[in-house]
Length: 273
Image (tube, rainbow, N blue to C red; front, side, top):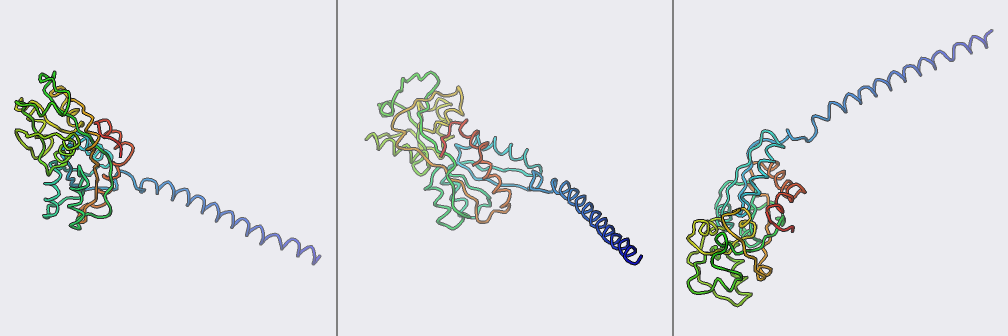
């Protein structure tokens, strides 16, 4: 009888312990499931970023960066991307002079180095696209311009970007590669100003970027020339040291360098780095 009594008492604590263990496991499983579902909305989703991002960018990036800025704001409600477009040298001087900005996208490594040498960039700039030159003429190319040499003919009204601006520096490289000399009717502070001279019929032609010819649509006609291969510009982008909205700025740079960003940029005529 004693053995029987012992046999009937031993399974009871075991069964109770097993049941308790099952209850604990069940509770843990339920809690973990609830934790996972509640964590998903709190992950690094679009609503995480907020505030304004100020981007200083080369004038030739105006159309594509405006598109990317709108995309960024859609993907991150509560953010606003503010752009300042212009000649890269002027923008670099503004940054080193203390102008508030979060991101700098330059049309050449040389103008980016103005910022990095001054210690105003955070980290190493990354090349995100490249760009090459083209001759912009009036629609229909009434002057029958077919080469860079044609621009040196007497009576041609040709506009170049200022030599300190990346598009102007690139034009000088292309001319030097062809052993050509050209005296323009004016030097412009950025590529948009140069191509506008042609659009307004104040010049017969301008040496600008291929992307700007494309952006101008039917207002101008583009003429390719082989010497442009000697003057392709790399475009670097960098987070600035005193960025007021560093996290959003990093996210914008990531968009520019992403597959989606590259699709917009190559669609505008830029070359992949």
